[in-house]
Structure formats: structure tokens, C-alpha cells
Length: 420
Ligand SMILES: [Zn+2]
Image 1 (cartoon, rainbow, N blue to C red):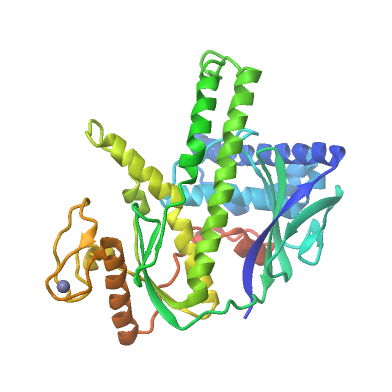
Image 2 (spheres, rainbow, N blue to C red):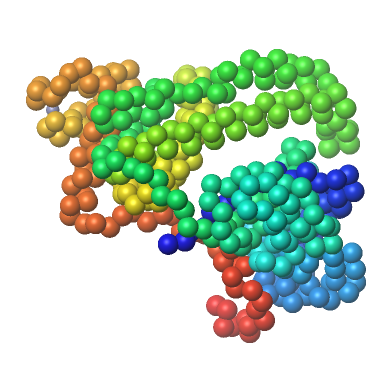
């Protein structure tokens, strides 16, 4: 069975290539903004709703007028127009705010949604990326499994160029044992296992927080940009802020590495994983205004975000399913794992300060509360699996993605009444 994987390579363009890449990025940004503006004016002035196909079909004419767009490749341009459509679709579905105009600084790059316009010259490790009208760009990186390349996204992040390539590949199967485990993600520990194992919080941000604080004091004494007063940022302010973002991106890399390691370790010994469904947005919400426990809540949030639970969970999920195992999320509200006894099932509310689970039913003690919660989840999931073998489906995409778009290829305008 082949699956889709994303592989990211770092690009090393020459000076002239670098200049051209930046120029192309700017052109894509301008096209994006033009499409947003087109939709807004058509609606406000004429009450007309513009859809993706209207804009796609206007592209050839647009290129007659703006000839510099010809060398970018028509599919890449379509993909940028599609990005605008994604943004509006998300807005219409109340999933995000109104699409914004983007500045060059915030516009990261562009996508080749199919084979046209680019060609990777690599066997999965290092090599060259050939872009039409640009030539070969040196690239470094390594794929775990290489296959048929499908789409390519060029990105510019923190002064570096990257190519993010999706490939259809047959993954090498991870070896797993037949064990089952329940996992509880929390604030006190990063992960608590139902067998009593505990993984501590890595506290990446804490380690680098001192450094960031020092730099923040530095940058406070420098001139920040103020758009209302038309003040540009000073060079020294930019320098100080760059240093901060450098540390932040290092922390992000450390976190990702740590997550992969933890997930691999879990999957290497277990083929049945049970955990709870979490609403992270509610969990990491800011403290209420005027709350006395504001500082504690901020610290709690920081701990949660430091681990990156959402990402860690999805990594575990895909690694388990890829290895042929089962991943189940239990409903938190209904089950209340932290209040239930894994031995007898009696529910009793615990205070946050109670670190241990105590019960009279003869369950082994002392038992950590998070470990107890993980045991409850495992028990519940086992019962679920017996009654129905349906595995929780992953969350659906809100408005399609670039790959589906690439697969569609060219589409002519369909009369608008048949679209609805
Ligand atoms: Zn009990």
C-alpha cells in the first residue's frame, strides 16, 4: 500500500538564483493580493461572488498583460489562485477570519501542484532540484522513504530556502510488539504510561527563556516599527529580533526531534495505543481577566505548548497505524479518566494538587494519578475494540488540499448554478 509522505529539503541557490527566487516569491505574493482584491471589489461594487474558476480562467489574459508571470509556470500560478480560494472557503465555513492582504515578509512561497515546472534529481538523499527557467538548485536532506514525487512547495523561512516535496511511497514498516498501552498527556509529566513509565517534560522553552529575556530587554531599547507614525524599525532592532527568532526556531526543531523520538519509542513496543480526545484550544486558553491565578495558568499553558501535545499525538497516531496497529481516542467528558478508579470504576473528583490515586478497592498503591488515568483509558479502549472494530477516523480536511487540487488538473468553468 502506498501512502503520501512529505519530505523537506534545504535549498542552496546561487546568488543569481536567490535573487530570482525572491523575485518570483514577490510575483506570487502580488498575484495572491490581486486575487483577494478582485473578489472584494467585485462583491462590494457589483454584488458578484467570484469563484476559483472565474479567476483561473482569467489567468491567460492576465499573463498577456503582465508578461513577467509567464516564466513562473501556469500550474504554479493556479496553485496560488487556489490558495486564495482556500482562504475564502475557510472563511465561509467560519474556520478563520477574513482573508488578508499579505506582505512580502509574510508570504513564504509557492507550490507546484503537479509534475510541471520542476524535477527533483535525487534518490531521496541530497541532490538537485531543477526548476523551469531557473536551472538546477543544490539541495540537501534525506527522506526516510523515497518514491514518486507528486507536488513541490518552495518556501523561504528565516533566511533559508526549502523545498517541501510530497512523495507517494511504500513505507518501510516499523517493527512493533504486541503490547497495549494507555497514554495520558498532562502538565506535570509530558506523558504517563498505563504501565507506570513516565516521560518528563522536556522544558525546551524554559532553557532558552533566559536567553530570550535578555535579548528582549536589548530590543526594548531600540526603535521598533510604528506604522501609524510611519516609523521604520531600526537596524539594531531588526538584529535583536532576528536573534530571538533564531532561538525560537531552534527550540521548534528540538521539540520536533524530541516528539519523533518519543513517538517512535512508544510505537516500537506497542501496537495498541489508547489516549484521550483533547480540546487543546480550551485547554490552553488564556486566564480570565482579573484572575488571581493568571501566572499559574500562563505557566501551565507554557508547559502544555512546550510539549506540543497535538503534534505528538498525531505523530503517534500515524506511526501506529502505519505499523498496522490500532489507535483509539476515548471521549474525555464521558469517561473522565482522571476521576475514575482503574480498579473498580468508582468516580471521585480529585483536586489538582492530589498527585496520587487512592481507593479502597485493593488496587496497588501508591499509584500516580496520571498513570491511573492512562490505565482507565486503556481499559475503556479495550472494551471498545471488542464491541466494534471501528477505528476513529482522522479529522477531515476542511476545504481540500493542494494534492487533491493537483490531481484534478485543468478544469473548465462549469455554469455557476451547477456548482451549488
Ligand atoms: Zn477502586
